[in-house]
Image (cartoon, rainbow, N blue to C red; front, side):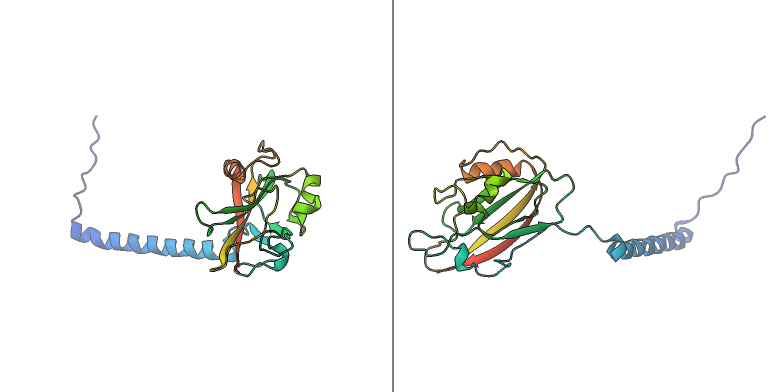
Length: 206
């Protein structure tokens, strides 16, 4: 015995249009609700990884305490106090760099330090010269003044330069970097293990 299914005649395109319009309206409503939920505090993204300083603030001028202390620059050359918050999950260590992108050529490295333990969330002022970083087991690069550690701003007279301060959260506690290696080498190794970064930019001119 054969069963035969009834054949439903295809609906005309004109009679199908109201259904399409209703479906589109319904989907648009769902999208609006989803957007509202995502934008609400309940569904807000995790707080961002941020960096702050008691010596510096974003867009501000560098104090004399952080300015270089050689040649014709008469600062105190003290590395700035830094603190950071909300690093990404999985952070195993931190690194810090200070770079001047306005220096002629490839820019100017003022500081690069790696191997800061994941349990540390701040550096005191003058951490570079005081021995604080060495006690942590961190290592510092040779900056473009040809000095290991921190070298503050000392641009030529004229237009102020920008100084980009970056704290990196890293996926490893061992970048296999040694004290005094070039800053570019630090920058390369840091980039291979970066989970996230926090950044602020300050200025200085003479």
